[in-house]
Length: 145
Image (cartoon, rainbow, N blue to C red; front, side):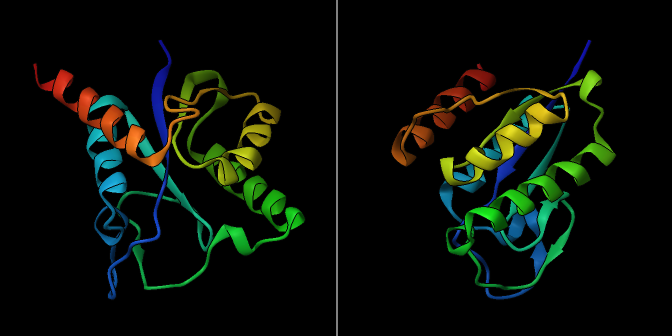
């Protein structure tokens, strides 16, 4: 049986001091994604524009960088690095990846996942922020019942 692996986006809202990834980002969407990942996935990782792939315990310092400022080539290089590092932790034949995050990230991560042979799903594809928050609320409520 394949392991369920979450690959989650981070967020814009951050602390103004260093902290582990799961505490550093403060948006409601990020916090709900962490709660969901802790309940639903065997393991999970994060990604951001500055550092690429992140482990939940990685400590971050405040920064101000958005992938929206990257050129198309920089986004492709970024995505390739994220998935190359991810592959050091997770083998394509042993996992199903659940990709969370905005289209600006997914547009470049998806081709890299495919190229490396990963099976992946996008649980909230096409949902806006409010819809994603509602989706997480529903999923988290159902997991309590």
